[in-house]
Amino acid sequence: FDLYYGEQSSFAVAKELASIYLSEGSLLPPHWKDKFQQVQEVLDSYIEYQEKSNNPTLQATSNVDSATGLSAAPKIEVDSVEDAEAILRYQNVSGNVQLNYYLMDVEATFSFEPFADMSSSRCCFIRPSQQQIFSLPVSQKSKAQTHAVQLQEEFVHAQVMLEFRTLDCQPSICVTVPHFCSRMNVALNTTEGTLTLTAKDNANHRLCSVYVKVFALVSGNATFYKDGYSDVVGFFDYYTISDIISGNISKFAILLHSDTFGSHILSDIAPPP
Image 1 (cartoon, rainbow, N blue to C red):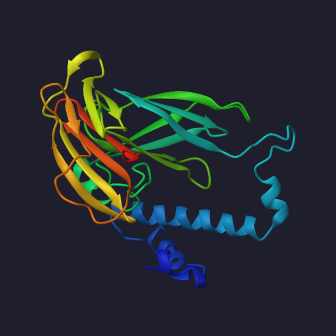
Image 2: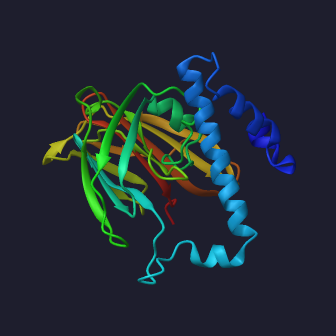
Image 3: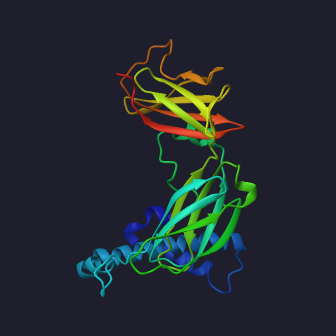
């Protein structure tokens, strides 16, 4: 597809197709128009990047407010997602934001790429399970602000990827973050290669029967290492195995999953010394 391989032609084919399918006379179904709108936004971002790259003066000054000398670049990030609320931190951004919900199979996603950044967006061409539009209050120039977003009730206890996409600034800013509704605390003992699980709201409540899946990075390759369940006192040994591993283990990635207490992923865990 030209959007991925057409850089030498400045994505001429992708530009032409997006222009055709987004024109007023297009008979394309609305959900396909949404996809080509996303393609157009990617192309707009590329064009802006090229203009800045070819104009050193523009590149040096475009993100600086001429009056204050402070950064004027629009920014938005997710500070936290707790229970039914997401906290956004933003600067020089206002207007409408679209929140897309993507239901996830966390174990399948983790098993496919156990060492990948779960916040990186793979949602661009997947239709969201649900959408929500909200408005950000106008921010004071060059001053960061926070805004609380209430999640839709049906997704509060679901395992979803949340994608926040600005609608009223160009180029559009897109931020993704996983929401695994985890209600467990994890105590790691990296010296012994063990972990202990307790309830987030009660440290005396040990979590048994939590599924644990472990991958190891062995000589640069993600390799299934072991799986099992936490015992009656919430304990699990993620390091000890009976097999001999051929190669050097540089780190572990661990998935914890419970139907009651949600999911939790631990990455970049160093092996015991």
